[in-house]
Length: 435
Ligand SMILES: Nc1ncnc2c1ncn2[C@@H]1O[C@H](COP(=O)(O)OP(=O)(O)O)[C@@H](O)[C@H]1O
Ligand SMILES: [Mg+2]
Image (cartoon, rainbow, N blue to C red; front, side, top):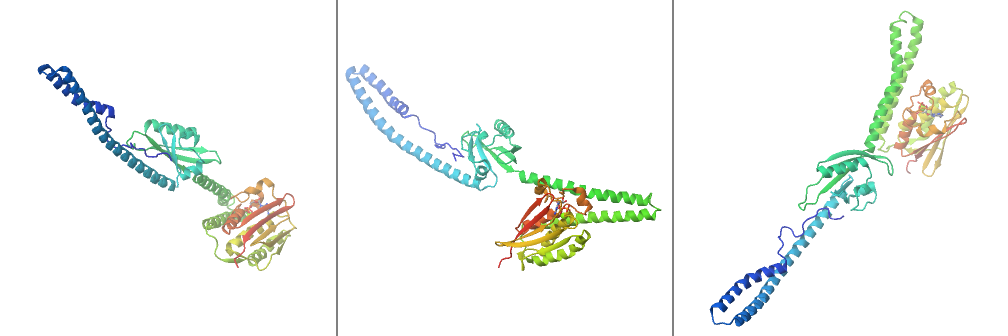
């Protein structure tokens, strides 16, 4: 760091006149009256002018020698004092610099200091992490080449006021940054310094977007069943008031739509519960044969309606460090999907194998499969390849989002593979329980 806080090394000590000037001043103060006195002597006494001149020259030379010696001693003493003051001031400035550097490096915010020529004087550690290596002394534009922040810096240098600007930096990845630029107090030596504090707004911006997308998605998903409930209620109160057949038909639809809304709300609540706990690993032990066995039993009925079978081939025992309820929800979603989207009359297989200290459980169906471009987005909330088909099958579009979060809470991995026209494989990799 090149000196953050500059000081006048001589401090408040006024400098002496240069040595020759001091000497001439002192010597002439002595010699000029002497010249007058010797002149008077030569004019008013019998002393010859030559003798008077010789005496005066001797006295002048002697006085020059004495005054020079005295002044030299004083000058040496003064220079010593100045050097000592300068050394102390430099040492204090260096200590101040080091302390300031430590404080700024300890901050989490990236901070840069620059002068009134826009030359960088210092970057703290987070700033170096964010902006890469930038040498002090270089123009601010070498650190951040963005017209908005550069214009704001120029305005602050001109006016001495402070400014806040938001700007986007594309390299190495797109980030939204907020910069607060302020003028620092003058340390007393006329140098002007400015500070830029950067705040990375990318995550909060993404959170804002996610939140507003989420609200929009939820309202959109609820609006459709709600609209149909409202119009049915209106019809039941109006045109169908005296039509028992129509009333029966409408009651069936009413029941379906209300259940659909309840499913959406249920799934949203589980999703938010799982997300809330995602940073805390589960504490219990879950036996996957028990978890999967229970789900398969209850799903066989629905599979039977489509003439489908479910086969299970799991190693036993198979204990993972996990929450049985959440894992049931996970496999329920995968098996439900396999039954829903698999072709009628085919088999759904659930099989597991140990790989190192994990177990890989795959749910495989034979169906239309999933086009490759949709696979990366399947775990997004409400993302569906075919909305109509998902709704018709009673889907909420939240099942795989729940799966993703449960897997992530269990420190596992979800792998989705699909062959179009043949079927899909959803593999969950979970760490085995220790011991
Ligand atoms: N086994 C599968 N085969 C084909 N497509 C699937 C399968 N599982 C999920 N999908 C697709 O992924 C989408 C999201 O699944 P999910 O989150 O469980 O929502 P949904 O409520 O629609 O089942 C589904 O709508 C479907 O398009
Ligand atoms: Mg589903």
